[in-house]
Each structure stands twice: as structure tokens, then as C-alpha cells.
Length: 591
Ligand SMILES: *[C@@H]1O[C@H](CO)[C@@H](O)[C@H](O)[C@H]1NC(C)=O
Ligand SMILES: *[C@@H]1O[C@H](CO)[C@@H](O)[C@H](O)[C@H]1NC(C)=O
Ligand SMILES: *[C@@H]1O[C@H](CO)[C@@H](O)[C@H](O)[C@H]1NC(C)=O
Ligand SMILES: *[C@@H]1O[C@H](CO)[C@@H](O)[C@H](O)[C@H]1NC(C)=O
Ligand SMILES: *[C@@H]1O[C@H](CO)[C@@H](O)[C@H](O)[C@H]1NC(C)=O
Ligand SMILES: *[C@@H]1O[C@H](CO)[C@@H](O)[C@H](O)[C@H]1NC(C)=O
Ligand SMILES: *[C@@H]1O[C@H](CO)[C@@H](O)[C@H](O)[C@H]1NC(C)=O
Ligand SMILES: *[C@@H]1O[C@H](CO)[C@@H](O)[C@H](O)[C@H]1NC(C)=O
Image: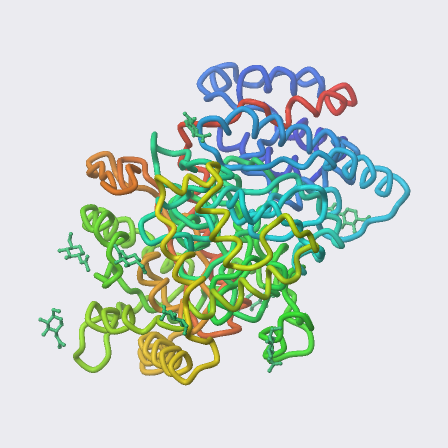
């Protein structure tokens, strides 16, 4: 193949972004015979080496929704190579292909195609609303929407009552042009239904499964968001996190999860667990997509007074953080797998600890290759081991129940007035007990029951004392070594990151790090009947630092992602077959 003819094709192409990507794929020998022939025909150039083409693995000329970025999709839309309407239809087709097996999405919007056609008309008329104009997005079922879809946090009972107003961050995505095409499955009430419910299960959505290993956990609670991002069932998704609900699904689904500082993004209109820890953030295929969405979501909101604590008038422009050199000269503390007192997670992952540590070591090499100075850190306060510290933490979460009770009561008071549907936690509990669609006979609902009965208040001295104790302890576990060693961030495994960041509301960015090797043990969680470790099971690297450090973390995560390139190296066992090639026919004729 002669380079000049490829170059010519690029110039003739309407979408240079896309072709630059495919050019580099071709140069690394990844083009199929058919595509090469097509190129040779359209560019009127002979194939220089038939041998080379014959040796190349199969590769489609069209980009795939498994790895195309939001900016690249926008380029295709800008150049009229695809329309938003076709794109929405394509994502809906992909959902239909895999959802019976994975249950990632629990409701589809029946207005999305109409909205897409509207966005297409606007684009045609030169009106671009923002960086998500005409881009299909899926949001977790705990984000209130008023677009005809229900909002239940997975609960059939809560979904009976309609929100009167949309979640602030959903409204912001729409203002930037996004099309909300569906609601993602989750652990019901983000894990707040009972203390023995299965992660990723909800009455509205059934059991979510990850796509990489059969019967794989998708983790929780933003399980459907993780799977949807991973398989390209939407161009981006929203999750929420209270303690691990973005970080863990990102870890096990080979995707990027951004858990922002509590208060960076509004939680108004989101079914709550505890206002002190809840946060809203994107789960996506790449750090760049995450930065794009976070830039739109971040900012103050009069309806969520935690956001008024932001230390600036306007948040940073997060897309400016995407710098390949962001790790150069940075001091990064590395915390290997550490035992914590948080039962289940430890139990299942512990069996593959040695393998996880090995993959983590490779990640540290990649960080060094990107210019970072990596310093190994052992967490723990003045001789008290990390596991003991976390044991103490575990006992200090008594504020969560009254927070949940008061937050739910406030959320439900904003629902549309309707005497027939639940508007208080007591009515919600009654419905869960009696509506067969909630499986009250089979599935524990003790947490909802105890919040309906709690006499403790979120503002009590007891709650504040518990909260300040939890916050002080976990924040100290992070900031002491960071200050002592002059670190810019800590990198670690999901479980440790969650312990450090949950109570004090610190940010975590998780990036694909590889997978468990062929010799790894297959681990079933005996309670959940889900696989929590196996050969080919995805792993992620989490970046943590003090509050409001998203800009720096995004830069470091991006530089690591660009050097390590792990996401594309791992193939799911379930992949939708419908892809961009189908809707790019017009583009082919154009050539
Ligand atoms: C798409 O078009 C808009 C409006 O012309 C422009 O601002 C934007 O940079 C374009 N984006 C891409 C990725 O081509
Ligand atoms: C679950 O919660 C209930 C009520 O709060 C409690 O009685 C029970 O011991 C808990 N079970 C477990 C396994 O923690
Ligand atoms: C949940 O999914 C399984 C497997 O796809 C199916 O057999 C079962 O009927 C579903 N349950 C409900 C309540 O839809
Ligand atoms: C913050 O908002 C909550 C809920 O809207 C409200 O109950 C609380 O009083 C507010 N706090 C302050 C300091 O404004
Ligand atoms: C990227 O980071 C490097 C190193 O910190 C810095 O010198 C450079 O100016 C940055 N580039 C941009 C475009 O911000
Ligand atoms: C964590 O896992 C290890 C290894 O399986 C086990 O020995 C330990 O008891 C577990 N700790 C907790 C708190 O579950
Ligand atoms: C840590 O916890 C273990 C087991 O709970 C206990 O035996 C040990 O004494 C504790 N160590 C410290 C320093 O508190
Ligand atoms: C809450 O208070 C009521 C009335 O004072 C009492 O009957 C009930 O037992 C209390 N509930 C709990 C969980 O303490």
C-alpha cells in the first residue's frame, strides 16, 4: 500500500478525525483484505504488497461504537456522514441485541428518536446546542427525568410516582444537546434496599451481568451504566456513587469512571442515599469522554447547597486537562492491594490478590513510562494497620440511615401530587411489602424498613459526631502520606480507593488496567451467585487525591490511559453486532 494514496484519501474524506485514527490502525497492519481493496479501488492505487494484506487480521474500515469517542462521533455528525436519528436507532438495536442476557438497560425512551430528528434539523440549520449535540446518553434509573420515562432507582413502587422536575445534571446534558435514550439498571435504591440484596439487581431491571465473563458481576450500584458504557450501548452514561458505586462498576467493566468531589456536580433530582457522600458522575469509554461530560455537569446549583462550597466561581475547563505529558515529573504514591474491613469485596477479590498485584505492578511501569515518579506507600496511621483503621471506619457510619430517611422524604416530596402513589417512605415501604413486582416475599428489604422506622435525625449531634469521625479518619489515611511524601496523587485498587474517598467525599478516577491472567482462579460470590474473578476478568486503576483535584487527576489518568491502552486489548464475550458500518453507507457511496 502506498502512503500517498492513503494520504489523498484522508484529504478527500469528509471526516479527517476518523481517518487519522484509521490511518494509524492501517499502518500498524490491522486492515482487512476487503477494506484494503476498497481503499485501493477508491483511491485508484495498486496494492503494493498483497502479502502484507493477506497477513492482516480482520478489521472494518468503519469505526466501532466500542471505542469511538464522543468528539469523533460529533465529527461524523458535523460532516453529515451519520445522523443523530440513525445513531439513536443503532444504539437501540444494540441494546435489544444484548439486553435479554445482560439486563443493562431497564427502560427505553420512546421520544428519543423524535428528539434526535429535532437535533438533526437544528444541526442542519447551524444551531449547535453544545458539546453533546445529538449525542445519545443513558442515565442510571435514579436520575429524575420528565421525558415520559419513569424514575424508580430500580424500584417498581418508587417509579409509580412521577418526578415533577428533572435532575439538574440531566437538564445540563440536555442543554448541551444530549439525547437521553434510556435508563440504566442498578442495585435497587443504589444498594439501599436491604443488607443482603444482590449487587446489580433491581425489580425494574432484573440482574445486571458484566460482558467479559459469563455470569460476571457488573458490580454496583451503577451496574447498568458500567455495562452500557463498556459495550457502546450509548455514547456515554451517568452513574452515581456513595461508596464505590461508580468506581467498582468502572473497575469490573473495563471502562472509565469519574467519581467527582461531593459538591462538584449537583445531586438535585437524584434519588439519594446520604447527602454527605452522594455524587453524580460519568461512566464512559475514555478519559476524554469523561472530561467532556464532567465539564458540562460541574458547577453550582442553588438546589444543592453542597455545590456552593466550590472554591471557584466557575469550575476549570476539564477538557484542557487532557495532556499526554500530565504525568511528567509527578509524584504518584502506589498502594498495593490492601486488606480492608469491608467484607464481601475483600472476600472474593482476595483469592486473586497475587494476580491483581502483578497487573498493578505493570500499571506502575506504565506510569513510570509516562514520566511519573512512583513511590510505594503503605497506608495506616502511626503503626495502626490499614485493616484495623477501616474496621474503626466501618463502625462509624450511623449517620447514613437518618440521611437516607431525610433525603428520601425530601426527594419524594418533589414528586407529582397523586394520592394513589407513594409520596412518603412509609408508603414506599408498604408498597414494597405488598406489590408482587417488588419480590418482597423473596428479597430482603430491611434497609428501607429501618429508614422508615428510624428516630435518629441527620442533624443530631450523634450523626455529626459519627460523620466527622469517619471523615477525619479516612481523609487522614490519604492526606498524611500525601503531605509527608509530597505526592500529587495516590493510585490503588478499587477497594482501597473507596475506603479512602467515601466518607470525606474525595474524587476518584478509575481507568482500565488490564485483566486477570489465564491462570487466575474463578471465584463465585456464594451469596450473589455472580463471578467476581476469572481469567479475562477486567481490572481498573484508581487515581485518588484531595477534594477539587479533578483537573489534575484527569490529566494523570489521561496520560496513563494513552500510554497503557488497556481498554481495547480486552474483548467482551457478548458484543452487539450492529455497528456504525450500517449507517455509513451514504458515506461509502460518497467516496
Ligand atoms: C462540530 O461543529 C461545530 C460547529 O461548527 C464546531 O464548533 C465543532 O468544533 C465541530 N466538532 C467537531 C469534532 O468537528
Ligand atoms: C440486616 O439489617 C437488619 C436490620 O437493620 C439487621 O437486623 C440484620 O442483622 C442485618 N443483617 C446483616 C447480615 O447484616
Ligand atoms: C430475569 O432474567 C432471567 C434470565 O434472563 C429470566 O429467566 C427471568 O424470568 C427474569 N425475571 C424477571 C422477573 O423478569
Ligand atoms: C441545604 O439544603 C437542604 C435541602 O434543601 C436544607 O435542608 C438545608 O437547610 C440547607 N442548608 C443550608 C445551610 O442552607
Ligand atoms: C502539557 O503539560 C506539559 C507538562 O506539564 C506542559 O509543559 C504543557 O504546556 C502542557 N500542554 C498544554 C497544551 O497544556
Ligand atoms: C479478607 O480476605 C482474607 C483472605 O481471604 C481473609 O483472610 C480475611 O479474613 C478477609 N477479611 C475480611 C474482613 O473479610
Ligand atoms: C489489629 O486488629 C487485629 C485483629 O482485629 C488485632 O489482633 C491487632 O491487635 C490490631 N492491631 C493494632 C495495632 O491495633
Ligand atoms: C421510634 O419512636 C417511636 C415512638 O416514640 C417508637 O415507638 C419506636 O419504637 C421508635 N423506633 C426505633 C427504631 O427506635
